[in-house]
Length: 201
Ligand SMILES: [Zn+2]
Image 1 (spheres, rainbow, N blue to C red):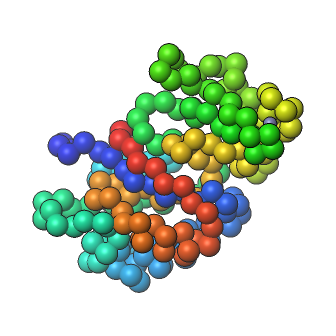
Image 2 (image 1 turned 30 degrees about the vertical axis):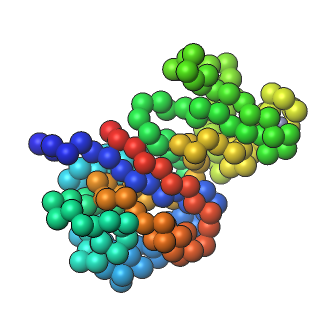
């Protein structure tokens, strides 16, 4: 039985294509193994990621990735690598984005009207959901902006910070908070823009 409650810190590559994601994932694992942050050993202990149920066991130098490793009782869990076009939601609960900002006209399209509502407005969400589903399937998908009418690729909508679409993500299960410098180095290694989430299952 897990007693700590399972939470994750996630880094999503929001620029890599579905085709490049697999090879890039392998290069990132090689890099993290070389750095001693993870090992090649896989475990499913405490891993509840989107499409994979196992991750890499931490390596001897895992503490180099975190902001504070002073608690000797806090040992990190596996790092799951999620390859494939998908959407990722941080936080807890909702499966939809709270809002998205149109990159053409900068209108904020509210999907979940907190704090009055706690569920997505289905009519507003549906075109986004459809666009994401098409992108997942084909690599291209758009949703129309209800304000300016532009058809905007789902990879270009500016999603709220807890929502991201991307083809490669890394879930650090039960790690102490990753340091800002590690996240920056990680993004440089990817060579792409990233979005970071935290959440709980
Ligand atoms: Zn617009």
